[in-house]
Image (tube, rainbow, N blue to C red; front, side, top):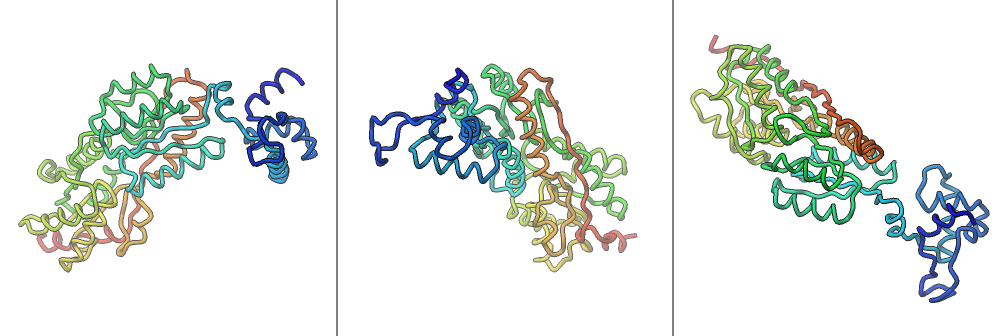
Length: 368
């Protein structure tokens, strides 16, 4: 047996299980014995045990059956010690209940699984303290890289801390500091919101309210920047038209109902996300108003429900699954080349125009 083959065999637990025919203390099972049992080469057995995609599925099944029959158990801990890698990637988001993150994690999982990696998912609930506990635990588990959507009020120094841990980190959708430091993947929300305002202005809207979040992280600032730039370009009032609050469907309902009671109620709403926008649609319907005619509504993210609701919701598509895939691919590249130059990947955020911005505003027509 060569030195390489001996090191491969060190990755496995060679003892038969207690219930097996040989019992405790039985001679160890080797790759060569599994190969003979399955009728394949020893190198093929090694590839199967390491979950290589290079082996045909029928061969993989036959080798696994032989390994099970002989009581050969993979020792992943020994493999970790030799490779210094765990084939795991930590994923920390701040709101797993939001469909956006469900789609993003699905994209991450597709790429990692195809590469033989497993994601460890955690939900910070936008709490820096909770996030810190997750990061510490992931460090203890020796994840190979981290995909992080930072919790609000996370100190920018965290990126330096992760660097001292030698833990590659890709920031997702939010970044720490005024500009991204290190690897970052997100969507051009600033341009997407700008396009949404321009679309509403082209329809004749002048009373356009932004239902923003009550936080001050990079994604919030990008929404606000895009809104301000487009409103100022159109010569429209900005500051009095920005309302901050929670970012749930229920909050969107209640905030819109309150707005409709005002004397100068808006003719159009741009909402921080689709959940708030769906709540706004429900509020209009409860008041007997028609979204898209009596008041336009625009969401952000373009989750699946946006196109399926009635009326269908105009939304700025941020393409979360594509963001997840790009982030996972960047994580794998960083694992392979830890010293590579930092990458900043910003995907387009496209305006998907549907029924809730289909016509000119009735109220603006009546006042003209």
